[in-house]
Amino acid sequence: MNALSVKLPHDLYASLASEARRRNVTRSALVRDILTEALARDAEGQLPSCAELAGDLVGAFRSGRSDLATNKELLREAMLADAASGHR
Image (cartoon, rainbow, N blue to C red; front, side, top):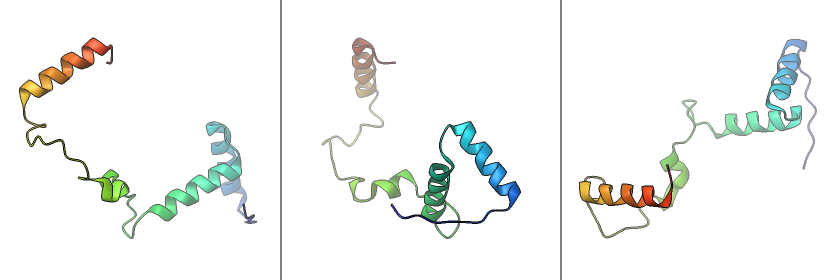
């Protein structure tokens, strides 16, 4: 891992240290997380959507059923199977 030194104004350093304590992480880990998130944002400041993150996986698998989202019988069967397995 590479090292980087950054000079921060007192107020910003205090905020960083306080947030790191609140999250129970090191200041370095917090700065890495913040930089990673900031650099992942697009030109409008938005983080990528789940569909964008999934990329080429979206739609890669087909069940053979076109009515999975609207078929009430399939929903009922899934709910009964879920209840029988103890999931909530």
